[in-house]
Structure formats: C-alpha cells, structure tokens
Length: 401
Ligand SMILES: Nc1ncnc2c1ncn2[C@@H]1O[C@H](COP(=O)(O)OP(=O)(O)O)[C@@H](O)[C@H]1O
Ligand SMILES: N[C@@H](CCC(=O)OP(=O)(O)O)C(=O)O
Image 1 (cartoon, rainbow, N blue to C red):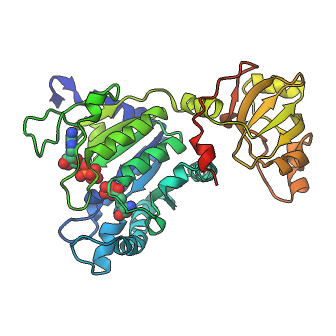
Image 2: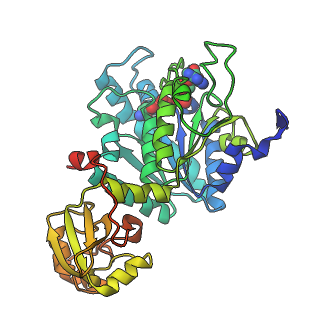
Image 3: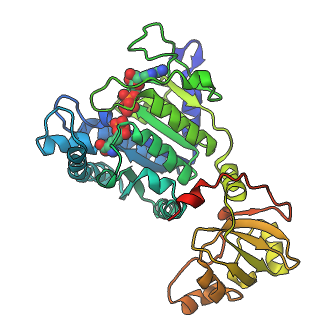
C-alpha cells in the first residue's frame, strides 16, 4: 500500500512510533464510548490493549491518558444526553472513572500488565513540587513495569471541565515523564489545512516540522458530541510537547488495533520536536529556576559532577538557604564558584543532617529511607563555573505551594 508513492510503513509516524522509548497515548472519549448507547466500546479497547502489550514486549514504556469518565458516568447516573452542569459532570466523572479504570484493568490484566490509576489536574503539572512528585511516581511505576492510566481529576476541578483538556494534559504528562512521543488517537487522521467537515477542499498535512502561526491558525473546534476539544487543543498540546523535546502524532483511533494501524502506515500527522527531552529538561533546570539555597561541595564531588555523576551527601561540606525537596539549589565549589544547579532531593534541614555522610547512613540519620543522592544526575546541570543567565521567567516558583 502506498500514499502518493511513498511506502506507508516508512511514514514519519510509523517510524517514530517504532523507535520511541517512552510513549504517551491519549485516548479521546469518542473512541472509548459509543455515542449512541453511552457504553464502552469493548472490542476496540481490547485491541488497544493488544497493541500496548506488543509495545511493552518490544521494550517500550507506555503511559495512557484516557478520557471517557464523564461519557460513561452520565449513562450510569441516568443523566441523559443534554448539557450537564459542572456538578453533574463532576458526579458523572466520579462514577465513570471507576468503570474506566476497571475496563483498562480487565483488558491489560490478561497480558500480565499492572494498571495504575493516576488522577491529575493541570495545576499538578504546573506547580513544581507536585509536578516533581507526580514525575517521581510515574517514573517508579514505569520502572516496576506498570502502565499508568491517567485522567484529569475532574471532581476537584474548580474551573469548568472542558473536553479537549486531556489533549493539553497529555502533553504535560509527556513533558513530566520526559517521553519522546505523544500519540493522540483522535476521531480524525491528522491535521488538515482547515476542518474537513466544514471545508471539503481541506488538504491533509503529513508532517509539521515547526509550529508556525499559519499552522496554529488551522486549528478549529470539534463537531463531535462526546469529544469536543477539536484541533485547537491538539495544536496547543503540540506546542507544549515540542518544547519538551517530545514528538507528537495525531492519528485516527477508530481502527481496531489503532496503534498497529499507524505502524502499518495509516495516515497521520507527525509534529517534529524542537529539541530532545534530555536537553529540554536540562534547559529548564539550568535556566528557569532561581536557586533557593547553595550546597558547597568538596573537590571529589566537583570531579564526580564533571564526569556526569550525581551529587551524593558525602561530598557536601556546607548547606545554606531555606529550601524544600524539589527546589532548585546552586552547587558551589570550594572556591565559592557556582558549578552546577539542580533539584534537591531533600529539604535544607535534612540536607544539613546528612551532609558529609555516606548514603548508607541516611536512613539511620533521618529515620526514613530516602534517595541515595542529594541531587540525581537527571536533575542536575553542570556548567563548570559558566553560570547560565536566568530568564526571569519563574512561573513555577510563584506557583509552587
Ligand atoms: N484543521 C483541522 N484539521 C482537522 N480537524 C479539525 C481541524 N479543525 C477542526 N477540526 C475538528 O477537530 C476534530 C477532532 O477533535 P475532537 O472532536 O476533539 O476529537 P478527539 O477528542 O476524539 O480527538 C475533527 O473531527 C474536526 O471536526
Ligand atoms: N476528563 C474527561 C475528559 C476530558 C477530555 O479532554 O475529553 P476528550 O476531548 O474526549 O479527550 C473525562 O474523562 O470524561
């Protein structure tokens, strides 16, 4: 099969999907829930689980961001087809979410895959400390072989629940998890020059190397009854994902075996990332966050950091400032020069207590089992004295609770 003479299996989306190490898959309500009956589309969900199991078997890590709680819950609560008030949506979400999580467990369990439910709000992805906790939990779940199934925590949402929010949430999750691919399974096979339902001359766009204003202007709303985010929220997601070094694909999710269909070359739109997840994260740590404290380290630690290692408590001589776990701190060499920045794994009081001690002593000193490192190498930017300028854009600081 070919599209315009190209081998379908060599489409950017097919190749990107096969090559990705950590993939976030966003599933819209319209795919999971039958619009007419309000029931789960079981056969389709089963086929998605088979696809996920295949990805896992070839070594890929998978996170699912799934909508569908409100669409399922409204039928269970007998709320009918009309427009719901916010409290009714929240009640529907609370009811439908159990069904949704259970459905994923039912289809992934037989593949030997544990499902973990994670409910997040968009604020969780923006306030830095909660962001770091969520990031650590997701990392641990993936390491333990589970598939996190994430939805927005609709019952605590203070703003109106907007369909399409999960497009944005999935991009935040991709950023949080340093994923290299975000796959949006949609009711359409990608981005068109205009909404094809409105403009029959609209043309499909297979690849978006850069999000230009012209591309961003193409995103219209949605005409579906259950999923109403439309293309605008997907392009907003592409922007967040791209800046985090994550490529994005919009593909038709209706096929039975929706991921196999993309890999077989099914039509989709591929969005190139702006950078790599690693570089994006280092840039974020090094340039955006103002340090709340300093850790003065010995020569041995300076050498370890220069080699790309983590900062262990044993190499810390002095701790200054007031900071909590997850705050940015500056690392200073014995001559007083800032050589690195990173996110502290302990608050300042604990840091003072364990400074100069071996990691094996941490549990005895603090009374709990924490991380071995004061700053893990993934959370550290070494700049050897060449301090990067802060941009002054410090929104996370302001929002951190
Ligand atoms: N430029 C565009 N290209 C493609 N689809 C568009 C465009 N502008 C608006 N749309 C609409 O966006 C819809 C996809 O979003 P949505 O209905 O929220 O689906 P889902 O949440 O299932 O992904 C399409 O069906 C189409 O009606
Ligand atoms: N959190 C809501 C869905 C929000 C949402 O973005 O829905 P959709 O546009 O179908 O992806 C729910 O589970 O019903």
